[in-house]
Length: 305
Image (spheres, one colour):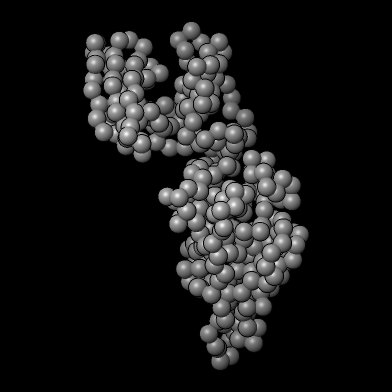
């Protein structure tokens, strides 16, 4: 099964596109009645790639989708990160791939009026470039096809942890910055598991609609890379969940090792479950440092409270 799409530009060019249910391009037929180099939204076509450069994003007119997420998506949690014109191309235009605009607020040539980006928008773009994309409402959501991509260590260790205690079961209203920090902490846990496998693994009950919704935040596609302090240091082999950021982990033997706190995330809110206390909680990462003139023993396995 598939669908047909008809693309046109501001002149007389028509392109008939057939895509399958996975949005994979099957074939196209050019019905061009002119030699215009401009395509959808008046953007110049790249003959080598078949794409169009919107400035903020690259658009593939054959698939009818952008090839990268909207860098301002953190400011619009109610939209898909791949949306165009606010998912309403009848009322809005999107001339640069960033955000929808009303046509009557553009110049006569249909280009958006210049304006200075807000500090929040600048920060969102910098965060996107420097730290990668962390969705507010994850995309994709959990499906039968991608449910095996859920991180069992992220779920096993942090399924009861939320950005804050507000709106626990309404992700659209979560604090965006705290969610981003929590996803970074989960990335760190996934990284530590590669070095120390004695962690808590668990799988969500996908038959429960609420659990399924929350499990989306544990899809590996929705978790960014770990911060470099953790990712690039193979000696960071421990993490601990504690109510204060300066807590030492009991998993490292103080007889043989000192422990260095590499990074602490939080506070977040622990809604309960496991041995961690309900309330404010930090996710802390450590590396053991062997004491001088002491016969060492292997570092103990990672344990959570």
